[in-house]
Structures are given as structure tokens and as C-alpha cells.
Image 1: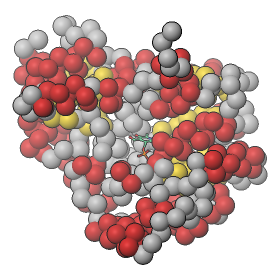
Image 2 (image 1 turned 60 degrees about the vertical axis):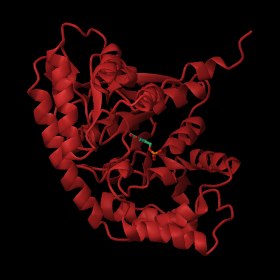
Image 3 (image 1 turned 90 degrees about the horizontal axis):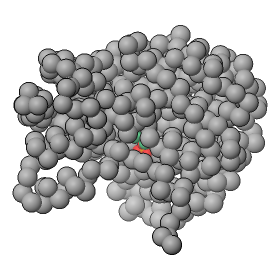
Length: 395
Ligand SMILES: Cc1ncc(COP(=O)(O)O)c(C=O)c1O
């Protein structure tokens, strides 16, 4: 009998699926352009004051396990950042749990919020770990539609039709991965209202909160009057420290209904001991320090976003919405030869050495799309889009 659990065999992570194959091609001497992984720290330098803080934290010790919920100074800095940047008022350090990236936050929250057989509403297309971690926890991820023709806005009627008795929370990813959509205040309010009507929290992933080009981003908790919000956020993207693994969960709980759940997440945090201690000490310096680098990051990315959008819309058979935040563009392919997005991605890699992610890896609504990361410098993007253009015109 083959060894290995069925639960794990259900896991999918399209974003990294083809990396080994791409590396093999690279080892054979091929030039590969990676437009698959959303890692800004590969292309932008981590600010010096943040790197120095990490070095100092390690030189000065800090080699012990930190408190499981996170070091007090970091939990305080998180409350301050959420208040100043996202206008989320009323959080205290007790409402915050530091995690090894938002990835761990997703895992802890899904396990603490739902029992086997319960349901979680997740967007389609979605960041894949929401689906995979649900499966691993025995929770059923029910997807709600986001509408491409309306800038990938969540379909509120679809959400309403799917919130049944078993649903324990509604996941919102804003700004969104993979679509790059930033939702209007009205849309966020509508989702808060549906959650409120059913007495469940909104689980709001805001990891791209400070990477916004157009429209105005509103943090869910900042506009919720009485509906509880579980916020997921982290330092990976905006502070350019993806590899340090630093994120957090907060419980915005105006009516005091999340105490049990908060304690559940803290219990789980105790079970995994602690998050990297020196990284937490440096995280305080990151959050309390200058935010100048974020302006520069967003300004460079805006140019890359505009260029990618222009190049893609010039291609026959390709259509895309303009991303308003994050660093992904999610075009739809309407190409005679390519009925399947995953085949398109494999053939593009083999023939031109450009690695994208197939849209179906993000859910049913992603079918027929590809996700392109526009983080690399302009000259690399130009080379990549020239190759994509050659590939499509040769089809
Ligand atoms: C929407 C979203 N949430 C969470 C994560 C995970 O980030 P990290 O674990 O580095 O904090 C990502 C990373 O790409 C993301 O796009």
C-alpha cells in the first residue's frame, strides 16, 4: 500500500509547481525569466535600518524562544501601525498574535475557527493556501465568485446564496492576489453586512495594504462598526523581508464575541513554541521606522504595472483588467491553440524560458488565465513580454 495521507495528496500550490522543472532547464544552460513568485525581496533591497536591526538583535543575544503570542514590543508596534496606516482603532497587544508569516496565520485561524465538516467562504480566484489549509483541517472551502467584468469585484449575491449554517467565516483578500483588485468601501461594507447578518467574522487578508496604485484601500476593521474582523497581515511584502517569516493575526472585536477563538489561536501558537526571536526584534524597528521606502517601492511598481498592462492589452487574444494593488496581473487568454492555461504555461516555459503561473491554480474562475508577477526591472519585463508576444504570435 502506498504511504502518505489522502489529505496531503489534495494539496496544490501552482505557484511553485514548475519551479523544479525551470531550475532543471536553467542547469542545462537555458536562461529562465521567473515571473511566478511574488517575492519583492528578490528585486528590491531591504532598507538598511531594518537589516541593521536584525544584525544588532542577533549580536545582542535574543537567541531564546520568544513568548508564543509574540514579543510585547512587536505586538504594540503592530497596534500602532494598524491605527496609523489602516485606521483600525481599539486594538490592544492582547488582540494580536505574531505568526511565521501570514501563511502560518491562515493555518492557525482556519484550525481555530472551524471544526471538521464546517465551511469557510473563500474567493474564487483565491490565494491557494486558503483552500489547501481548509482541506488539511477537514474544513470545506466554499468558493464565491469574483467578477472579472467588474474589475474582479466579489459577487455579493453569490456570497449571500452560499452563507449557510455551517459557514464559520468569510475570507476577503484585499488588495487581491491574483487579480490585483482593490475593493471599494461599498463592496467591503456589503461583505461586512452579510457576515453581520449571519453572526460570523470576516477574515481579512491585507498583506498588500500599502501597495496600492489606484482607488482607495479601506481596511475591513476600519469600517466595521460591530462585526468582528480577524485581520491577517505581515511584513513580508511591504518591508521586503519575505524570508524572515514575520506576520500577524489581530482580532478586532467590538462586541467581545471572539474571546474563545482568540484563545484558540493563542493555544495553537503555544503548541508551535514561538516565531523567530531576532526577526521579531527587528520587526519592531521596521514598523516603528521610516516608511519612505514604501513610497519608492510603489512608485517603481506603478511604472512596471502600467508597462505590463500596456504590453498585454496590445496582444491579440489577450485581455486584462488593470491591477490597482499588489504586484500581479491576471490576463485572460482567448487563444485558438491553447484551450488549457496550464498547457500554455508549460509550453511557454519550454519554448521561451518564461515562467508564469496557470490561472486554474487559483480556482475555477481563474481558468483560461495566467498570473504574471511584474516585480522584475523594466528591461527584464521588456524581454519577457517580447518573448510572450513572439510565443503567442507563433501559435
Ligand atoms: C494574499 C496573500 N496572503 C498571504 C501570503 C503569504 O505571505 P507571508 O507568509 O510571506 O506573510 C501571500 C504571499 O504571496 C499572499 O499573496
